[in-house]
Amino acid sequence: MMSVGETGGMEETLTIIKPDAVRAGNTGRIIAHLEDARFEIQAMRRMHLSRAQAEAFYAVHRERPFYADLVAFMTSGPVVAIALARENAVAHLRDVMGATDSTQAAEGTIRNLYGTNIQNNAIHGSDSPENAAIERAFFFAACDLVGR
Ligand code: CMP
Image (cartoon, rainbow, N blue to C red; front, side):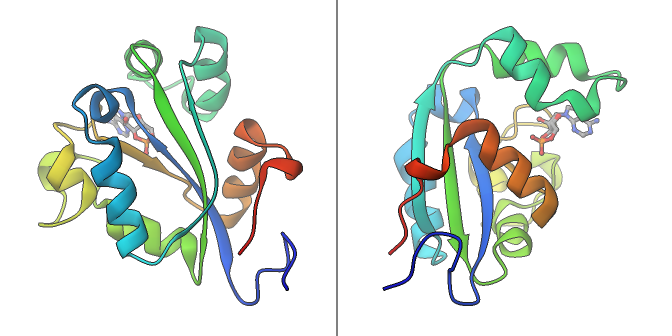
């Protein structure tokens, strides 16, 4: 049996189903899309982010003009954070998500199917293995992560 962190060639990432998608009742459809794409769900957490939590999660963007709106959006309702694993997980999640701007996202991607625009884009995905580790630690403790 494999233990967590020893995932046999697998890589780990993090996704957040954002308040627009949760509000629209698309949580289940997005989880099914991720399972169909062969992601393993290691941990999952539904929560309403505080302002301080949203600011901290997106701290890398704090100088960007969209930061205040982004924090307001991310605290506008519950989110579902999910720790995911599969081979090449970071790049594969980015493929399955589609472009940041939902209006530019390729047909059949999660943001194409469930997002609205560049901000209300249904889902977040880590952009590198290094950031995946940081973002996973933001939401989950090691004891929460359940391997196969
Ligand atoms: P995400 O991948 O979660 O990372 C940062 C988020 O900021 C992004 O998705 C969007 O929800 C939001 N955002 C709003 N405007 C922009 C923009 N111009 N460029 C990038 N991200 C933006």
